Image (cartoon, rainbow over all chains, first blue to last red; front, side, top):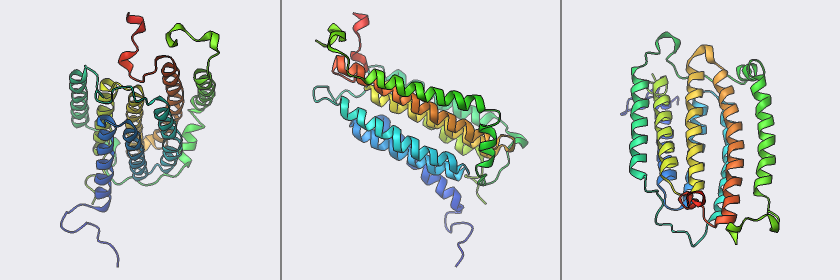
Length: 186
Length: 106
């Protein structure tokens, strides 16, 4: 039995419902990251946010970026963050005060930012440069043509950047020799 | 047929809201690692906007995904160095809270 084009009783298409579901998960999990008291739960909510965003990338037809998102963000960066949480969590630090004293100006600034974004998106007339349809999967050929064509220099610089980040991270996280430790730690 | 998922604006609005949430977390949280997580949220919002433009503007097909891949690479480098710095500071100060890093103010 073929599925109907429009879900009965709601009047929305399947892709609309999928988009609403995924964006709801993204926003709720992002709020969980930012407002959660327990930092381990914040890290797990971050994984949920990134996973739902990978779903939205697939909806946009960019499966290669969704794969990179899962591999790099969920597989590597989240694990790195969780390890850093475990290394820096101390029982002495007060958990009650999760927010700084500047929480009210920060909330004001981010609400203003959201309003400005909304105004900018609402007032811009994209006109005929945008085609209104559900995005089709484009495959990897245009991505490769862009990445290895006009952006080849950026691609090579990114590889050098990652190499230097690996070396710098190793150097920073290395255990310092005892005679090099500042008086701060004594 | 698809009134929401077939337009550019819903993706941009979602991206803007995600960026605003991330900026609030960066400005308001005390824990350095939560601030780094908020930076990741903001970078992902930018990725979403780039991919939406790439999907809906035919002349940008492919370039949005190329931008997003480069941003992911830079974000990985940033997370590596940032977390290493946090761990190095934690070794000296025994706290991950950024408002207690006030040696240069005393």
